[in-house]
Length: 284
Ligand code: GDP
Image 1: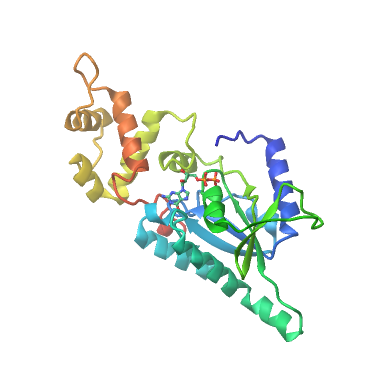
Image 2: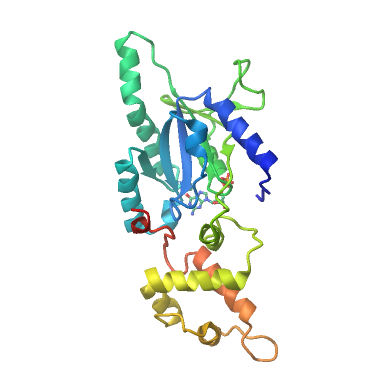
């Protein structure tokens, strides 16, 4: 999905999240495990204020496991509960319900102590485009989609999905915008495919990817492209990869555009292994 984020759209998206917030006990903030910082909406804190939140690092199957563990610790230290999942794996998603129960336990205990009847936890998913919101909702929904009927405050198109006895999820996710101000964030979102259609120059993107790999994952570069660093004249590296992978134009010379595409495809399709592009140590 491509969304052009203009100020009007941002205001509308924000308004929608604010409206739905009133209906839920907890916000599931979906972030890309490969980009635990760059895939967050910069204004979410502002939008949800004190509402209880669970951070869900989705696409954990594509991320560097060591970094994911460190990120979970990092968020814990900042006072956030966080859990890593792969939304394509329905079984693993049970962790989400469990984590939500844990986060809300103190509140639920207080309600019980006052003799109030407890009900299922109500949650909504919020995140930037492509982070996996629909996938997670569909996997959690199984077949338990219940019409909302005439619950006040819910538009008729919205439904509560009964995930388990303990959890109900709003079927409409809050779609928020990524950060655009920072060029490096743009590169990271684009190179991982978190933003697919991008006006970014493919060569710049591929070179960014190569340099990142050389710095953080040199072994993977060596395994895939038989190099450990990017040459000062990047064209030499392109010639090398082009020859190695036989990326040639009709005339027999290296097709540099195709080399760029190949590098980006390799990164996005995990041919260079599981990768994380936000390193926790850069944010400590
Ligand atoms: P949305 O725009 O946030 O609703 O994102 P989608 O649910 O449409 O997901 C975007 C893409 O990411 C789709 O191709 C999904 O199959 C893929 N995807 C979503 N979650 C995961 C995950 O946990 N692991 C992997 N490998 N892919 C995922």
